[in-house]
Length: 397
Ligand code: AMP
Image (tube, rainbow, N blue to C red):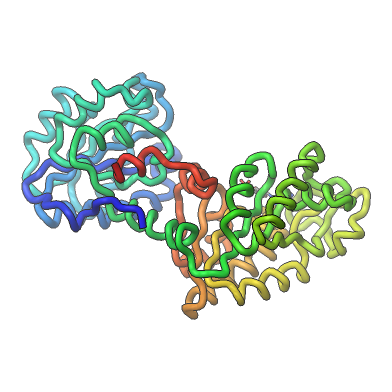
């Protein structure tokens, strides 16, 4: 296990706690349209406030690139935050200097305040130590609960950890524990599912996973590149023909590492990339010249489910088909439901995350039952790629 301090290791009573969170929530017409990220940070806020700490929230929003951009203010997030927390939250319209100092000076133990977008300052993304010092002046302890921003070495995700006692918040802790149990010291056999559109965006991921998992199931558009590399016709399917050599290298690397690569044996094909386009199932050896593979077929689903039944751990990133277009969501839904059932039955530890995966699992009504679903996107993928995340490394220093 990697070591990092948690809320069990510090006394926050009466302390000014700088809590880095992810409030980069989707907004439309000034309102939060998906509050998942807010919900994730509530336990840490409640715990620190409940223990008598002053909770000072630090977060970025959008990409204002060091300028004060009103459309990227965190102020519109405040009502949703207050609603979910069920309490008043003070707001400072700058994350450093007099506005922040005044708001913090007025806080009582157990109060919560939100500081304006950290990316209004150039020093944030540059990880400027002078900017980190300015922020550090406002607090006594740094708690990082933003795993999803931990792949960036910014002042409030990395720099601050060197200025103040630094610990992981409960969301960060849950994420790290889930990821470690999935790949660092997993119960075996381990299956990784990698689906989605393109091999080119997931090369490092595939390379890292073949060395760590027992079964690597490849689905989605990227499976087409592997099928084509094996000399199969893929018609008009999404396919990166120029990556045939890379795909063959991954297959070789898997063989050497004793990792079984599982490719589709049948496919659902259509002639239009559209919802409810007329479709039929074919063997991957008989894809027609005008066909587009939009999902894996029922034999492939049964094969994956059969192997999954023998596995103890599942790591999932990317859908098996064009899941936004029914009926090409069927295999993703079916396998997600099977993984959910095995998880509920206590037979499988299931971790999923990255990109569209959360949406695909929610659409399948299976996300709730997974052991852990990461909303972290880029950080989750970088972790799966085997990279060191600077925000996490700084907590372990
Ligand atoms: P990613 O962001 O790489 O996880 O890719 C997700 C996207 O891959 C989704 O928008 C899916 O519609 C798309 N996708 C999955 N399978 C296919 C396929 N066979 N053909 C085209 N797009 C696909």
